[in-house]
Image (cartoon, rainbow, N blue to C red; front, side, top):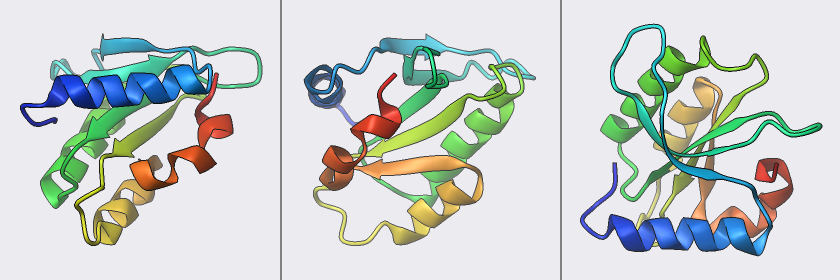
Length: 127
């Protein structure tokens, strides 16, 4: 789901996790109800009051990327712990308006977190 500079995007997200002491594991394959080879960028651990969180980064918000993430989440959530949540980290620096994509994600219980709003979200994402 990421462009050729995916490594720098990973470093950006990992830097954010580290800055807020968010426990995480990178590149998690999760076989869901059907084996689609779903692979998410990160997962945070199920710890105390915080549920497991499946996290995907998207560098270009579009209808197609939103649909793909939603399909992965629908397929995967049935085999994950009941309280698991899904997040999309939007790399939105050059996106003029991704509100339609954000609405679509929210409609399927996938929480979008734009880079510009990450500092407001760490308590929710921290595990």
